[in-house]
Length: 303
Image (cartoon, rainbow, N blue to C red; front, side):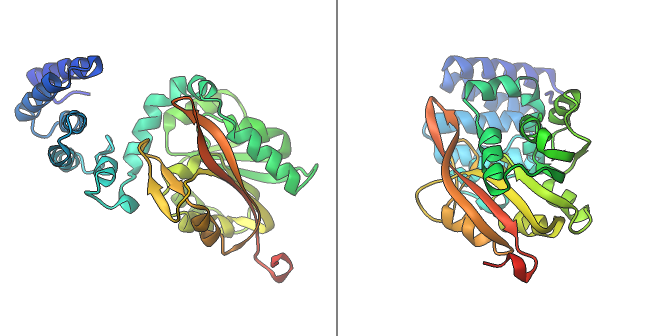
């Protein structure tokens, strides 16, 4: 990224090198200089916020993150999420599409290898749960929400006559396309995509950890219910916590309590909600939930 000012760019890069080496105070000084030279250079303000937070200056960090957000209202850096974590912004609206797209566009070339090192198991756990719900049943039409590079798609391809994937990140979809797993791939926001799909077109919708980037699950659950045929399945995993409601974790991913998951599935009959671990973080298991629900669009599905 460039500010358009060579001096600002140089100071920003030097600051990033110092920050990576643990010289936080000197890095912060360089980020201040870069931001002064190019006041609309959002990455410099964002890096300054990170440095100030490491130095224990929460108020100064929040101010820098606000400046980053002012410089880049689309919020590619994720400044609003850091403000929410500092209790200086509302978490409900903090996850910007631009941040998610930028994060995964950068992550795409190493995504599969990185998740393998984290013992990622969401696709295999979801497939096992779906097979418990519908043993030996192929599905005419399967939708993979937040499909990424196609890890879940690969797990479900043998069960799907037609497999669609949707994701915000073009770079992630390029990886998925190269695997020749999907019949259809779309670069779209999940809700926008679902709103444009015909009613009752899918037999199965899966989301392997995609909902950790969604605050309130109710809108996407309702949109998914519309897109599913009567009796169709929704299967997904989320990260969770022992309390109620929704939390923003230190990893900048959302954690959904079991009460929230149950409450958002009003248009479904929940048939499984189980505690799972789908990945590790810093060599520790990440607590999660796996849900499988039936689209209850007529009386025969109520129970």
